[in-house]
Image (cartoon, rainbow, N blue to C red; front, side, top):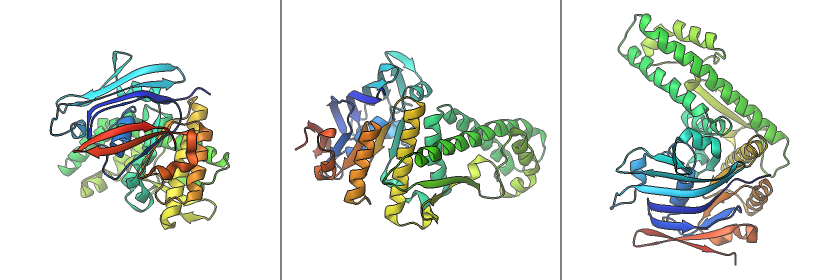
Length: 370
């Protein structure tokens, strides 16, 4: 299977990195160094080889190195099943980031069709016990990995919903103001729901078909109130009939923005929110690996995986199992940890980067395994 990996990565004035040049192959990348050295900043840069605002969901102006604030730039060679592509992304003077592919102006949507990038970061460890918003965002990232156009559908829905909510807050009761917005919301909303359901089917199959050291998660979509109307006509009717209730609330109370992702530790039949911290982490790892396996089958190559502080809450046995699964998948996984010993089980199956900090600037050094 042709691989998907990043080589010849260059960072300029990106967060704590004044300048960094890395020459890489398709093997996993183990990044180690003390806290605050700039390890996460490095994999955040890699996350920008996909659509959106990266793994921190930061504005372009917040990624610039200070105090210079000259703007930032990231370049790399992205090796995908269709061939190698030179990708550049940058921001100047705090403006929205731009993309160039093979020296031609591109869009983030085109970038999403070239490569798939998945990530798991420490802030997601509490995914199962915090707000539904975070779980929807997690689900939509997975859905977008299968269907890059999903991002545009979500934006279309949210834009129309903001306009409808403005009318509701202003207590506008004339139905004519709502018709066009509800048509747009019903068309986009039904597509969002269908895309999410299709993603869950793929994830379930990828978990069922694999023998893995990580527990399978059974997933379903639930609506905060009632059931999510699944067709365009049913959602349009529900929005129309719900106007008076929505007027009282000052916001839209039905639609895919009210959907939650409910997870269960399949083997135990225990809701993910009631599992131990270690089990919750293992379930997340299982889903990311399942997402990777499904993409390897559908897209033709495993995605880039970004696993920040991946060793947290994983014992030595599960850590070794994770590394074996990543290597079996053939993914270029970018993993961070405070010490090189956390990656000892990888040996020469990985390439190593040490990140240190000197006078507020991140320094990267590539090395061979000891």
